[in-house]
Image (cartoon, rainbow, N blue to C red):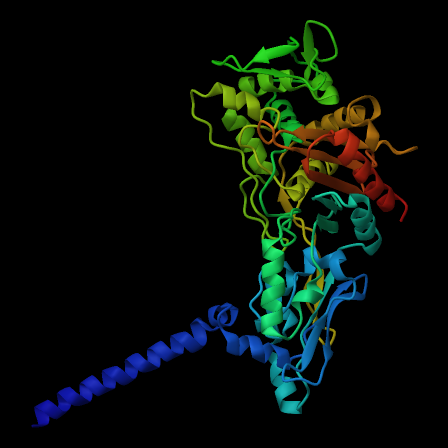
Length: 482
């Protein structure tokens, strides 16, 4: 009898231990995952008991919570509507994704590990809990200039400080008013979201950092030029044969330059001339001479294929893996076609690295996170992301890009009295499909204050220099007039 009792006792003890261990794992080790799970409605409703911290631009709120007479206690308000929706995202009674409202939810809700003592103090003193404030690097004047310059175009603008990585403007259009998704009626939120999700203009897509990435077209020539110069095998004066058209290797498919002529005249064309006039035939041959591994390694150093958060997740840009015997595809990548895909932020990073002497800084939209007691929980410190090119290559490419604006096919980015470095692009999306138009560059060339990328999607007609470059010019002028 005693033997059987011992067995039962051991079994019961083992069951209690198993229950203790499992509950401890759930309560301690899985706590963060459970809180972050969008299906956890209890946490979601509890979050409305706290006055959520504001999101600030130059000290002014672009998102804040106001008390209301409701079971939710607080209503989230976005006073500037669409202007900052790309950055803020939205906070609602239904699980949401994207924007700082999602990425920094624990800080904004006052629920981060760094705020544990503040929560404990609020409980002991009977104070109402509050979330932390998030100050952005966005400059309101530059953000407004980017918004206005983009107008009704479908596309995005990214402007950043090449010396620090601070993002000065982040605009994507078409977009949405986050106030429509911040209502405290679950059915109303769901209906509004479904309408936006079904909109063929895709207003919920952040074209600046994510969504369906675009072929870069000729702005990718900057990456190929960097790979060529940094390899030590080529200089700006290195020349290639200069026919008006050129068949892709192993095919009867011709490629040509935008003007359907030679690259500046003459039997040969230099890399410098080809970048200034954006000649596809020269860069196709250059890509073939470099090989895909050299180009890919250079692209990855600029950030292609690398994980990145600003802190919102950035969709990695792509340089494709090309079959060893498909030299035609390799040649197409030389001018940003084939399966090369990128975001405006990535192309702004390429220009920023050139502008900053070959050092690429980590981009971010967050300047600081400040607790309700004004203690700083996080503060932005410039950090190096990579060193993709040498200082000598950066200086050489700067002058090549200056010539592209002063005497080349990026001339619509000229600013009186300022040397602007830039590159345009007009990318094809397939036979009969509309074009993707680009500009990327920086100014002033001798002391860069801004690096920029502009993308215009689904344009039936036009060129990067005609549409994207003037938009970039207006944004750069806003920076220089501060």
